[in-house]
Image (cartoon, rainbow, N blue to C red; front, side, top):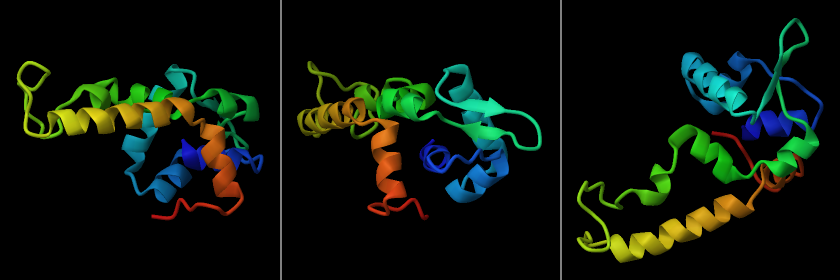
Length: 132
């Protein structure tokens, strides 16, 4: 999504192969994720020789990183145990439960308050990098 957003700021549409190549993910996996994003209305696509995936500027401003995480992983990132234990909650905490709960809450706040545009703009300005 970040790669598509950064390219969209340059008025470019990108194909699945290019996205996969720049993300280091297999093409089939990338296509599946992009399909999920399209169904959730988090990305646009156009078919044909000048087609590809893209985002509108206002769309990027409206999409929070939490929406992308939720589309891919649901809410498990906010609810899972830091040690991966099945039986971990307030009444039966793992050794890291209270510390991890704090980190999870900070992560959730950051993802809910950061838009796709915020990051894409930093990439375009050269302030941050997407190079693997």
